[in-house]
Image (cartoon, rainbow, N blue to C red):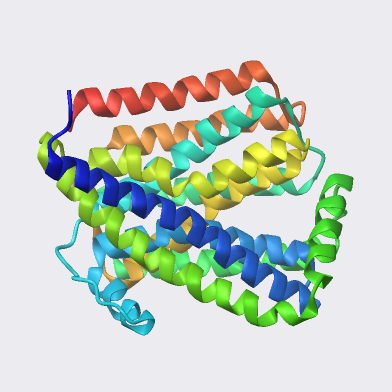
Length: 345
């Protein structure tokens, strides 16, 4: 049995949006990271800023497109094409971030642990976990009226600035793990190859941004059409398909890091992305235009906060995630996705 032609077309555009978001983030991070390394910026600082923010760009662009479409329409003109702003869909913005954090903590960490137990050497993780918990608690408290005002967005955005500054300063005093040093050395060697590649890296940044803007537009517009065709709320699409799709850069990074036994990269990637999502993405999105949660419920917020609390004893006690714990996390992710679809709120 074949899908109707119009629905098939929407699925193709939606898939194309996910592909553009994935490669857009990859190209942006690669170009920006190599330029930063050539300028002599510490690999750790690059990882804590450029890479972390770059892998959160899909979530940011999707949220801005959903809540403030005119913000996406304007920069699109810089790249020589136009985008119809369309209508706002705050449900998608909130659902994308809450769902993305759930998938980061449950599916990404869980999948990495199933491939190979994740051993965490770096003491940095002991600092990141409390920061994630505090960020989650503050975010949930701000959501007590199921909305985010501009001043609350400003507070969250200020938090990410403080987080980056604190990380950069502390990284100079806290010892780094052996595997992180090896990872950094690989990045430096790659950056040193072909000094004439600066223009190529700049091109990657521009192409990556164009791909992100276009991908966010396709994903939101055609995701709404798919939701309407099936008669389900936008929030279900954003909590599941969008959340998983915009988490693809983190998932790919974590799978590769797991195969290379780079536990710090896996946990730092997932936890750092969650912190950036809550503070930077939600902060900027609400700062541009106040957000209303719509049909995002306390169930979704509760699962996100519950997972944050759950991974603390998993990681803190033995500084590792075993396969059994990974299986638990993956089951939570799958159960949540199933519950969201079944309830169809």
